[in-house]
Amino acid sequence: MGMRTSLLALVIGAFATLGNPAAAGELDAETRARIEEMRGEALAKLVLLDEPRELPAAEFEAPDGAAATLADFGGHVTLVNLWATWCPPCREEMPSLDALRRRMEGTGIEVITVAVQPGARDKAEAYMAEMGLHALEPYGDARNALPRAVGILGLPTTIILSPEGREIARMQGDADWASPEAEAVLRALAEAFDAEG
Image (cartoon, rainbow, N blue to C red; front, side, top):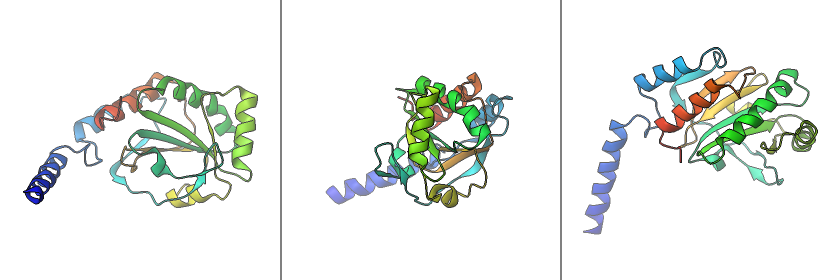
């Protein structure tokens, strides 16, 4: 009896996923079009992927010095910004990312920045303190493992992950992340994936 119940639950779950593209980690055409329209000028360079992409595991350093991976942020729509303190466009967008993170607290949407350079976490921490950026946490990747794993060639680059940890969008270059468009796009993605709390 227990085996039949388990099998039935598995079959029902599979059909529910087939009928709900977001549950399968994909956006339906209507949601995709709505989000693309929301991008406006502020996020014109944001590209929604046709199919979510599995990302290889790559370790980077958490604020406390422990090893972290993107899988640690599963269960949430997560914006991951890769940057460096030596990169002028990266530095320019940090205050807007800090503001976005503050606004997203408690929504089920994560905003993290990963500095990619030698001494990354310490340099990120010092820069954030100097600039008064208190919402962001200093993640770092001194070995450049994350950019290599996800195929990033330039900074800044932002990737957006589904709650399943698959890449659903990418943007090369800086943006005004404090813009209403940025918040609207993230909230729409969270709603589409039913991740917003």
